[in-house]
Structures are given as structure tokens and as C-alpha cells.
Image (cartoon, rainbow, N blue to C red; front, side, top):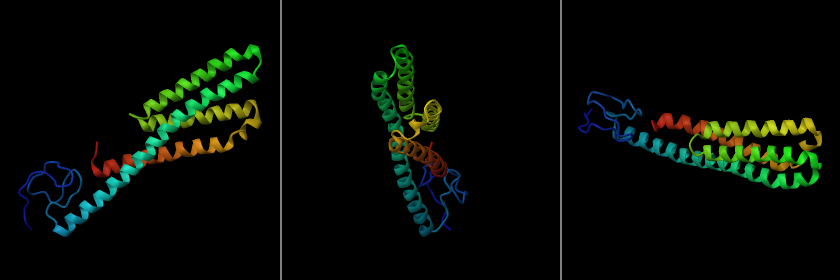
Length: 173
């Protein structure tokens, strides 16, 4: 077997010693056959494409937090018209809090998507449970939107976890 003369891995560009059989960073077969090396690089490229699609799913899930914030703002306008005069200020304050919380989670999803999506899903589910306790008929109102929102958030959380796992495999920080 031929000992490579360069000192950086062809896959992840980490330094290695000439006696290493595999890259300590990514597992690239430093002293493997050209076919083994090509196969490793093609598999890595496939994983990078998968990572790109996972990152897109994470971005969409993060955007759903902005959608929830917007829906909270719009629905609060309708809700304010249906509640008694003495309850309007408390309903308005609660909806402003929720709007700001989901908006903040949307922005947080750009830098810390796992925490933001799990927090957003938890907060959304808590709101739905509290609404159902207060008025069980709210379970069915807007059920399609609720299922879509919960689905996007769950899909985003799964994509974040899969992307983190793939980043570790590819040795990407």
C-alpha cells in the first residue's frame, strides 16, 4: 500500500500522520484502495445531501413557530370580540405573551433549533390542553391547523436530531 504524502484528509481536511490507516476525524481510508476511497467519498456526498434536506426541514419547522405567532395575533383579534368586557385585558395580555413567546422561539430556532422546536411544541400542546380543559369543544375547532402545526414541529424535531447525528458522522461542527 502506498503511504499518502499529503498530511490532510481528502474528506474532512483534518491532519493525520503517515502511519494512520484511517482518518481519526471521519474514518476516510487513508491507505485504502482508490475504489474504497471513492466509495467513502460518494457515501459522504450522499450524507451531505441528506443533511441539506434535513436542514431545510428544520428551517420550515422554525418558520412554523412564526406562523403560530401570527395565528396567535390574528386569533386574538377575533377572541377579543367574543369575550366579556371585564375579561378582555387578561385575554389580550395572555395573547401578547404567547405572540412574543412564539416569535422569540422562531428567532431562537435559527441558532438553537432543538431547544426552540421542543419548547415551541411543548408550549403549543400546553395551550391546547388548557383550552380543552376550559372548553372541551376547542379540541375540534381548527383541528386541521392544529394537526398541521404539531406535525411540522414534530417533523422538525426529528430532522434536528437526525441532522445532529449526521453532523457527528461527517465530523461537522
